[in-house]
Image 1 (cartoon, rainbow, N blue to C red):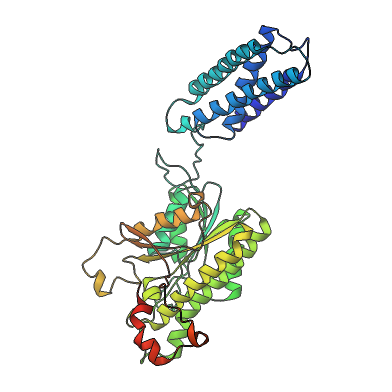
Image 2 (tube, rainbow, N blue to C red; image 1 turned 135 degrees about the vertical axis):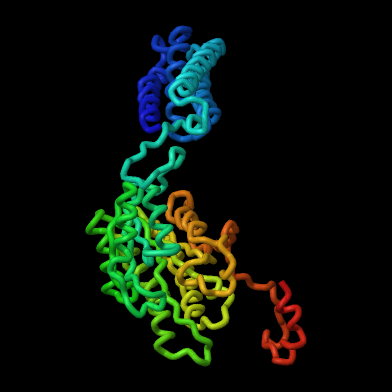
Length: 418
């Protein structure tokens, strides 16, 4: 497209001066009227290819510009007392139609009439560094550097593998160990890295702790040291230490909040600082939960952390948008090592990590556009968007707007009405 745009512009720049000339360059020389309009029409179509995706829009743009130039020239001659002839516009129209027609025919010949051709695009170049790219896939993350925390298993692993298949250079971060975070396994992240490499992708491992500032900075530095930059961060690391509210101790609370909420904040902050410094924006995807959005029995620590991530995502999306950094979150329901012993998953195998990974890809790629501050729910094949809503409410004008408790009780149905 860029080549055609520049070629078209060159033709326009060459022919436009002739359009502005008085006799004998222009005059009533029919051949010159026809030739210059042909050149402008052909070149205008090329310029239109750089502005529009549809062929009809390119043709309309070229025709309008070229004929507009002819009408302007005739009006200039008439107002200036020059030799203007409406018949010259006929040759302008014929030349324009010929030039645009030739350009359209060449466009069809070179790019075909299919979906890619309609956009004036040739098929994208695919690199063998991508992991098992299917024949019809487009590498949505080609040339991007993506960091996925908690990527040794479950949702994180599925996301890391998909990102690699889509052309990303991936940092696989995970300390490994049991789901309560009580110990670590240095081989966990490396196993996913080897899986990516065996499939032809590019990845490095990080075993740093997300819940410390030094650890978060080291995770981001791993991507920069290995690949030169960071474009995408998926905050997915997490642990569970479930207890009912009355039985939960402070250590259980701190451990879960540190990994989920503090870890998300530290990694988000470190990645955003790097993205701002290197320029070009970036995309960050956090992980909240239905437990945090609506609550869940026996998960006060986890619910509080996940609710905090919702608020963090909203605030970060507001603050970072001016830097071209888009921040969203996913609220997944999936059967993983973290959730497999929950009663709802006992006989359910339709909610898998592989259902969540494509949503991460969407939010991490240009497909998401400038969408930011969203929370996407994923439950198997069902996708949704969570939103905090406020009822229309009731306004009291009397008494300076001060309500009494009795008045609130009396009007509660109206206050709570959706």
